[in-house]
Length: 108
DNA sequence: AATGTGACATACC
DNA sequence: TGGTATGCCACAT
Image 1 (cartoon, protein in one colour):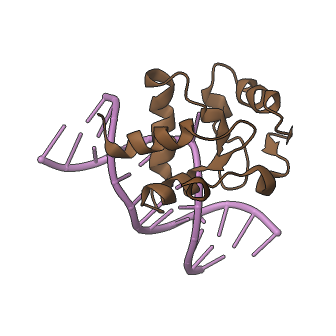
Image 2 (cartoon, rainbow, N blue to C red):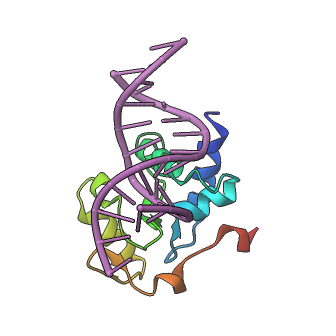
């Protein structure tokens, strides 16, 4: 068990439904530290090593922008994965973002 | 041990 | 209306 923080982040990210997305801020908030959105991003950075299957592509910044796409195998990987799930993306930004955004607290 | 960094967010100028 | 500054906390060096 690494830091509980990471564990929680991963747990939430893993449960993001297909075709849905969420934000770093929401995850941070769900964990209990609304101001720690950066930690979520940090967890993502480490995730691709420890949890390759983690759908990090479903996590975007508050603007619905694919801020972390450059951290994938190749920049367009993130967008392709999302589009493959039915998410519309234009200019690296998620369309209908507010409609497909997934709030973990709604499920719990 | 201390300092720096980061796939963010919010507030302020 | 947009850039700058600061907070946040774990991890890397």
